Image (cartoon, rainbow, N blue to C red; front, side, top):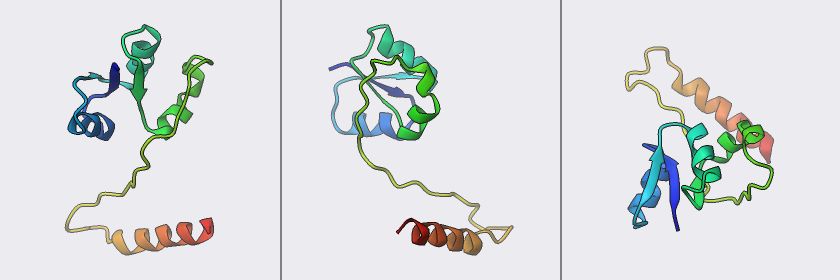
Length: 100
């Protein structure tokens, strides 16, 4: 199985860490499309949101499966000079509540 992912991405690091013999890497998500369509990989791994944003660039016959669900987060400066942590956490909680 020839796998490809964006270099430095969590997906690339995860599959390497899980013991896949070789995970080819590209510098952009657009290059992954060419890697797959050019027959250089059997499978590419990208975030679902990236696929959705670039759906028009992918061939119609592309088979999409849902992989590992990831938690995402916001990263702030340790000293939080703009005092964003509390309002950001409140906004996240409102979003979670609205989704239920």
